[in-house]
Image (cartoon, rainbow, N blue to C red; front, side):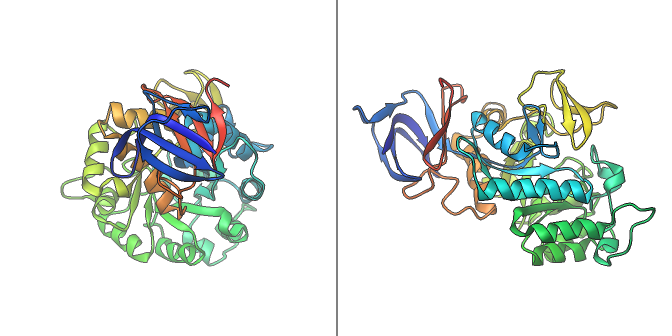
Length: 397
């Protein structure tokens, strides 16, 4: 049994300080007030213990991109615990079917045979081939396809791959695909939402120029998620609320927010949380292979070279290409810059993503919950990370 004592425990509804948490096997078996001394207890006075962070949108970290050759998913899983991540969705940009098949096979292998001292690998998040070209950002134009043509299994032009080839890989992967981002206003978009939902995929709205009405229709068709709210979609207008307005209004949608203070202004982060509530907002990094690297570092994003800027990742032409954020810094930003409470910050980083992905027993500190948790110091920096009750990262190791 592992006993962590003396820290402030960030529970779903309050902070228990000082508190003691006991782990037996992969479960939390006790949460109680007060500190405990003795040879079997690890003392963490002036620390916090929070549920493990769950990042549902992360392309890479420390020089590794999901679409790299080799074993990038396993490499990411080994690197992410130092940032407090206990579970993550490996995320891809739009890519060719053979590249998609390769990364989905990587996901399957990592899920079926988890490596020690690593974060849990969850089903993949595909920022897919079915997004609006006008809102593609760093997504490669040559890989974008029509939902209507994909569903009609129309042959590709000029020897290129078809959208149907992409859907075939998604269908073949089964439960190893968790989230697919698409633009609902594209021809056949609503039919594709229904097709994906019928195959057990969580449909996310993003990289889209959808109107308010088109957004609501997409939600009615089965979309339940929004990809990096406010980014790569038209701005919220008082006469044309657009997709942002539809997402904010709908309780059926859980919305991602990149919480680096750059992609979305802190005031808008606070406003979104106030409108939807912490239980409908998911903090993400949209991290790339330059996350965890110094400014000026270069790496890859789906075969494209990116550079770590002071605030984000950039293509060589200056296009914003995701973030350089890690989940520990997202948590710090939510508390220090956005002025959220520790409880609300833990809800955004852990509880809401775990619940939305159907991870029973994850995302909170409670008796019989899965023992995925993070010990933070007073500056909210990661000291230890536990996955299934096992110490997978220690700052002093």
